[in-house]
Length: 219
Image 1 (cartoon, rainbow, N blue to C red):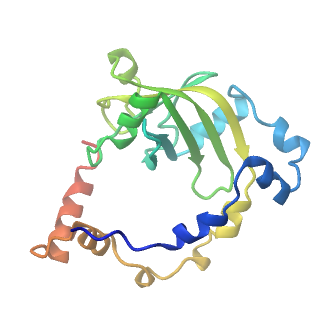
Image 2 (image 1 turned 120 degrees about the horizontal axis):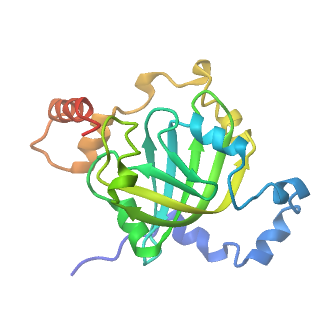
């Protein structure tokens, strides 16, 4: 007989967790008028320029059962195409081929984006309807990584929101003097080896696979 999973800290904390949005609002002051007003439903010239400067976008999605996922997408600055004031397209440079994000988008038709500009503290949140397109005339435009992608994630904008820089300022993300030394964290190969749970593999095996993967990262 399989034993029940051990209780976790989450199991304890959710017993008296905030029960609804009214209770949550009582914990905080109301947002400022500017914080509410700066949400828009389409891109301005300035937010288009932010997207053109971004080389990293985080994509949030959810499947039909409500399981959430956030995954990074990267490329040269401006690799995300602005098709019009309410539509952007992200080329899908082949990664691990799990297709978690794309399958979620197909299941629910929704996605959220967070644009990040390395070295800068401004971020841009863009949420809305989403679909996966393989239309050739679209893909032929999305060649920032060297060739047309197999597909593109297309987002129909419903919300555009520029975030204040506090999170990146607090994190010191762009301040090398505040970064931890490299040996303070496990290497990518060490993390992967532990995740795989395959005793026959070694760190050297994983490092070789990672090196080969990065060599052909755009294919």
